Length: 301
Image (cartoon, rainbow, N blue to C red; front, side):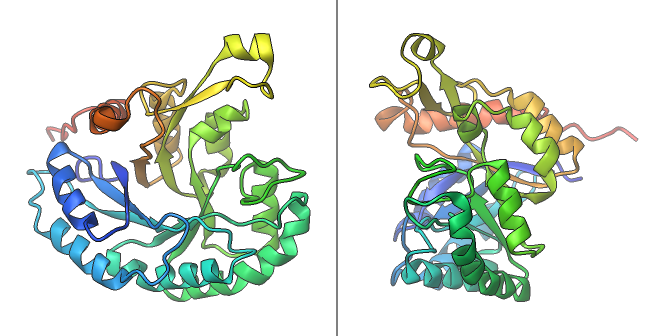
């Protein structure tokens, strides 16, 4: 192992004309990996040109002695592929371009047939993702489904069925491909009152990428008003400021032999926002690096 290259800590960056320059500015702060997010649509964005500019910045950044070189960990698009042919084309474009970014993970939502129970979406999921999985397999790419519920439940919703273990099991049974997995984060599990570490123990071999986003459950609100009232019962937080035990979480990942990136998903924290966004993200970076084990110390033998 070279330094902590089994589990890298990075951040998400949006895809736009200045993404490479944003990454250039973040590299001196110590971020080790970057997910490039295209939001809801890739559209006509010049993906290959962006990949080349980002790789040029990364290759021109000298890594400190003994540290692994920074890299792109994943690319993602977050439309609904079960209702949008444009989103399917976005998946195809990113699967084809992933290698140019130097990564092998393409992430996004599994999609959903609006306002129907999860099982009703499975035929459309199969029709959409069987060919996408074959395309990914041919190119050495893995597909990672974000586990955000998008305010959906098992019975209804409009965006993403891949938000709970029962749905994950159904997805993997419906399309039996070794490239299908999860873009997992503990925040959404806490919002469902599920234990994130228990999920890691069960699904570590299907987690391709981790989002570094946390949550705080406002128990005084839950006790007084429940979870369906006018007052939010939880807050999305940066790692280190929420309820997740990241030392235990990373230790469980490492104990399962997991390798990959934990990339901080910012722009949600109610405290570290606006002028404090980068301050909060760097604090989260330092926290996760500490939970990972701190400064790498090579064995003296």
